[in-house]
Structure formats: structure tokens, C-alpha cells
Image (cartoon, rainbow, N blue to C red; front, side, top):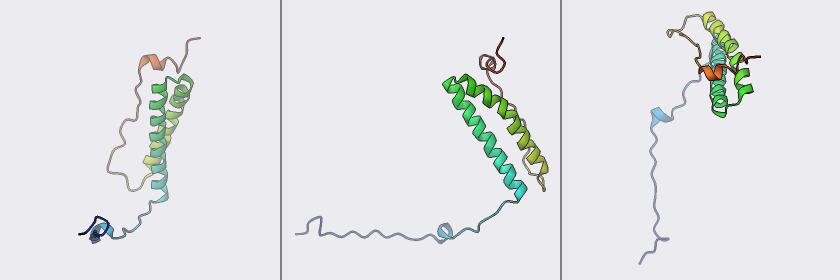
Length: 109
């Protein structure tokens, strides 16, 4: 009589060549690399804004809202320098926020 420890189970894995083939590495041109970096910066600022608003951290929110226009300007400047021009249009990067939170940007003295 065989026990569970005596039974040997073999697991067979089959390789799927298209999935396991090494893909050629693609490099971005320097201006496209800078544009991608500007996009990442803007996304990080937007994520930090979301967290600051959720935490009601007034000072951090105010500093991030003052930083965001510079990040948008950097992205637009990099986007315009791309050659050839991207197929997608950048669109409006304007950020809307609630009036109660907007009061923290310009406190009444």
C-alpha cells in the first residue's frame, strides 16, 4: 500500500516561445525621455495633491498647488519640442478643485 509520501507527482511546464522570447530593448531619444520624466513628475504631483486633500493637510496642499503650474509648463514645453510630433494631443491640464480648498491657497488676511 502506498502512502502519500511515496507518491511522486511531476509537474510539467511547457514553454511558450513567443512569450518567453527576449524582447529587443527600445531606447527613447533624449527629448522623449525628458518628456516622459515631465509626465511622471506631473502624475506624482497629482497623486500627492490627492493625498494632501484627503488628509486635509493645508500647507502641503498649498505648496503642491503652487508647484503644479510649473510642472504643467515643463510638460507643455517638452511636448512642443518633440520631433516628430505625437499623434495624441496633450489637451487641457487644468486642475479644478473645490472652493473650500481653494481658500487655503490665498488665505484672507
